[in-house]
Amino acid sequence: MESNRTEVVVVDIKMPFLSMVVFMVKWVIAAIPAFLILAVLGSITAGFLGGLMGMHR
Image 1 (cartoon, rainbow, N blue to C red):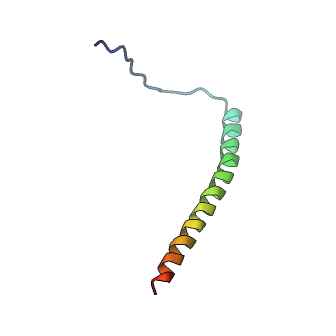
Image 2: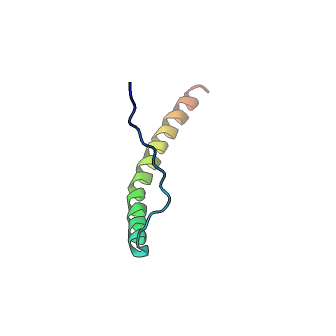
Image 3: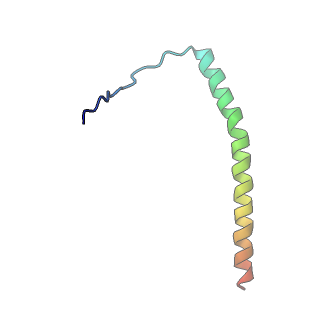
């Protein structure tokens, strides 16, 4: 079977500075709800595990 794969190496990305700043600001804004969701899930997990550990006393 013949493989027609071509390897690509990215050397440089030409992106205007202002566009990069806007992209990074959007990235940070998108990370806030993700962090909140992870914090809520972590709190629920910690509460559940804490409750389990408290039951064994």
